[in-house]
Every structure is written in structure tokens, then in C-alpha cells.
Image (cartoon, rainbow, N blue to C red; front, side):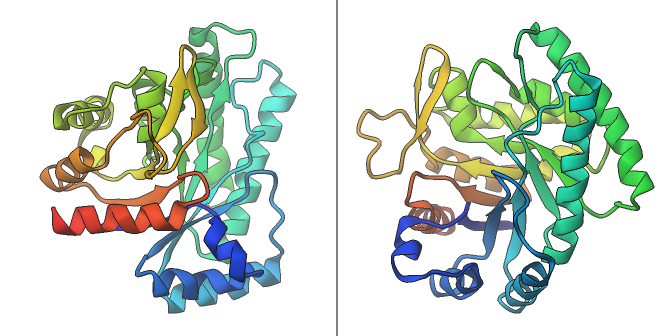
Length: 281
């Protein structure tokens, strides 16, 4: 099943609303059924509020995911800092249990001064350790979702994310198609381009490739990849990607995903646009 919703709070929501407790009704009014709660700058959600939001989201039948803190970096050479990043993941998951969210999106790591191979080696080692931590904390029904990244200094090509997620069934990919397109200088144009992303997952993950988390927005890019997120209406230079070919591939391959829109300031509007494209295709 495909669900649609925004990441965080769009400009239009913030014009007339001041509390996150109002977001479930806002999403229902706009006929959306997914939402990504931001822990981007830290886990600042209190337990009582998390429980209240869970009730509201459950009553509205909205699937909630969470974007983990940006400062997670599993590619840090320091074991102390690597362990801190692992703890941020565990802390996020524990808070998510109160919120009723199942999927935690993470940026796996940055190259810093390492080679790409060394950074990936460190990430894989930390993910092996994370598997043990998940067991120790009795976390078996939640998912850590490494994201495909848009900048050349970040770890997170489709193949890299596929290798990460092949380690454990509790790891599933976050396919950010705007990032993939930006990283490769505008590589996503045809249905086959999008299909090849899923076929790369299948190579490493087998039939689990159908269960993914998706981010979608149009993104300006340059020589080093991602520059900034755009919205659908203001992609005047046609950086892309377009959603229409992805919609066809999702149906053809029977993909199960929530599609979270990260358009700049217009997340809800563009999520609605994608939902209409998908339903009318």
C-alpha cells in the first residue's frame, strides 16, 4: 500500500496553527495519511506529548515515521562518537514507541577525512553493533531506515544503502529520489531509471526490496550534488525528478511505502499533488 504525507510542518500549516497536536486534523482535511515527525535537531518531544500525539494519529489512521537527528554519524573514526550516534538511534526509537512510529530515517554518515571505502567500513561495523543493541533493548518491530543522500561528501548511494539494509530485516531503505537524482546530476528521467533503483535493492536484499520508505522532492544540484530543496511549482530550471514515472513503477513492482514530501515550504501541497498523480495514473 502507498501512503502520502509531508515531512514536518509546511508554511501554510504554520500560518494558521501553532501546535503539533493540530497536524492530524490538518492531514485528514487534506486527505493525507502519513506524516514524518522531525527529530532533526534533537529529541525534544516530551513523553506526555508523544503519548497524546499517538492517540491523535491513531484515531486519524495516519502512519507516523520519524527523521532522526542530523548529528548521527556512523562513519566517525572515533569509537566514542560512533557509540554516541548509536545511542541517539536507540533513544529515538524509544521515544518513537511512545509516539507510535515504526520507521526511523537516519543519515548514515559523512566522509569527513576518510575515503568512501573506509567510511562505509565504519558504518557497516556500527550497524552490526546496532543489531545487538536492538536485541538488548527488545526492539524487534521497528525499523532503522538509512537514507540515500544527495551530496558527494555523504555516504548513501543506492548501492551503499542496499548493502546496509541487507544486514538485518530491521533495516529498510529510505529512497530519497530527489537526493538520488541530485547526486548523479539528473539521472532520474525515465521509468527504467526509477526501476533500476529498485533492482539495485533487489540485488542485495532479495524480495525485501518491495518494502521501503520514500522521500520525494525536486532538488537543485551542482557539481557536488544537492544544493537545496525546491517545490514542484518553482522548479523552473527543471532539475527534477518528476513523480509521474515513479508512480508507474511503484504500481508495476507492487511497492509498499509511505511517500514523504520534503518540498521546500510546500510539503503538504506537493504531497497532495503526488497522491492525485498516483491515483489518476
